[in-house]
Length: 208
Image (tube, rainbow, N blue to C red; front, side, top):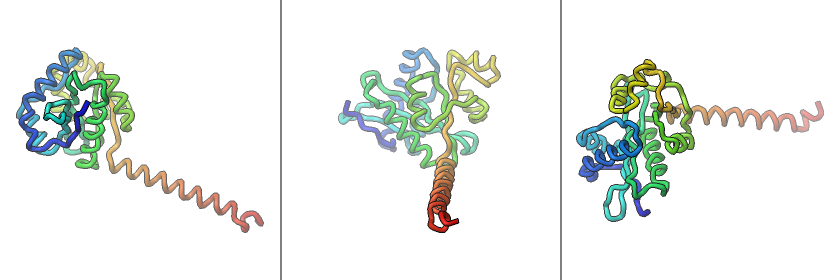
């Protein structure tokens, strides 16, 4: 498998229709829904630098994923993750997902990253990236996002449950800023503990 992963640019816009076809085929094979997007929509994502594409050395499409922004920048999602059948089982989905995750957090550092999926493989990748399972109430409430579920064969379940649950698992990762703040907080606690330990071992402390 010689496919390489790139941040998509204008030169890759010509793959828009092929990407849409690949998404449709993948959804049919899995028997689950996927938010349908037009080639124009995919093209705009690519031209805006909000997509990841995997290509072989010969220029053949191997995989794709794009970034969507929701709730006025409070949330971002990596959507449309797909790998062509002949390139599966080589870890390519994980590489694409990781780069899409990093792209989303670098471009939108204040936004939390979320996703909904029925795929155990995607859940495993998400967990490795720091996502945690959450209820749907913790995800974006942007109506446009949930409208994308209308093309899923399980949409009636989502409707019956008042958009509170479905067969998909909701997963959420902290924003880049939240993670940095958490890391700094941990480092501060660790530093204080080291200082206290050092003070307890000092001659003055022993003498006392």
